[in-house]
Length: 205
Image (cartoon, rainbow, N blue to C red; front, top):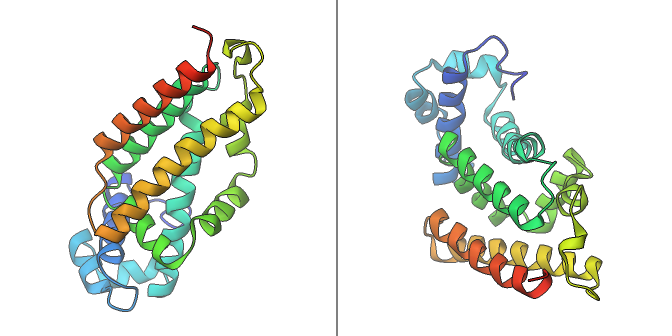
């Protein structure tokens, strides 16, 4: 996406991206209007189609942008020198909140993608973009000496991963089924509660 918008200001680029994310997340692909996109972005239709040959290409690039943005932000902004897995997972939650502040409709668009694709399919696409990222989150530089003696650390990490991933998936599925906005403050609070339980279960006191 950055290559497509080469020589364009970040502000103008983000206006186009946000306008497109909003339009596609509120409407089906068929009903989404490029007229609405250019109007909200404050650009001409000719300029939009200078960058994208048609609506389908715009949609496909937005899908790639959504997955790549989260992947790249996590990869580049996590403090990989930190050794506490729970602090790292909290950082990732905050990184995602920062993404939403910049692109308010990015998660609505992602939720719309989930209506067409499975979570597993999107995970596969993410892994293709950054094959080792998920493994790195849960293993790189983590201080396993913090865990209680006798704990199977590999299984413990799987429980932590599955618990937090399942929590996120349930919130997303509930959002889809009830057609409500995700309450990210609530999501952070829930993550804190789960991680505190997991910390007490697995860490030395």
